[in-house]
Length: 375
Image (cartoon, rainbow, N blue to C red; front, side, top):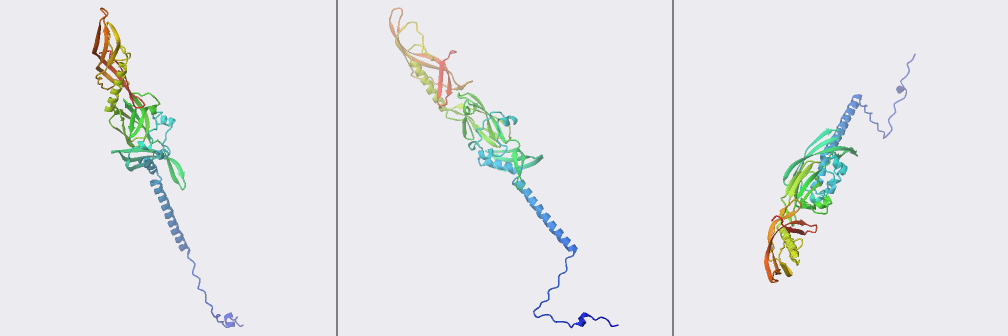
């Protein structure tokens, strides 16, 4: 029995058509191990990229959007003397109920929360940012202000996030503080060069001699307070405000200036001249007068050749004129009750006076004088 023939043997081999190019042999498929290795490499690279992104976001949130940076933004506003900008930062301002809750005096004035009263701030440095848990951070910054060095610690709380996962913050405890200021012997005072009158803060129209006001201030800073005007002057009293929501006690004591003494002397002289215009032996409301046993003929004529030179002291309710001696000159004809004869009286009448001095709202000095009954 014959064997089947090979088809290749049955048909002679045909040659390839002209111009035909044999396709390349297919590359062998990657092995399972190679594919797994590539997947692992890409996974590692992806993880590293994601980790780097999160690390960058974490550093950004810490250094740019963190609690320390939040406080730094507030301090920058103070350094730039942008009081309005600082007050817009969440958690800064305090209303009446919040003042009470913070342990600060109710009714404290916000008159010093303005650019003109802000102290100089330099060398701002973040000292530490401590995570206290539950979204609270204790942030400490150091500073220099008016040649004073200090550190202030602020309590900050988380206020949520904004896209993309950027944290927002608010002061958990307001950075404002209060200065309890006693102004002795004056109603005017200046803080870092900004002037105020205690009457505008208390609502009392009449000047008081011992004034106490509570004024809110920004923390931190060195505030220089004095009572200086044309009529009074005081030492400059510095107070370093370095602790938020604390009451800082300050007192300034004003003393009269030469201008005040001159104005007071002028007012006293005017009072004595008004007394001298009265054509009587005992002018009403005046520190001088005389009693004669005989009858007078004609109108008495009072005058002053020299006015008594006054001094000024601080009293309990006003500036006072201590016992001061003077003499008023009197000219009058005196008729004797015995024989009717007339004798000219031309002599000085000594007297002693005391008085009070007030600085009025129009900037003038008013004097009230009376006889010194203890002389």
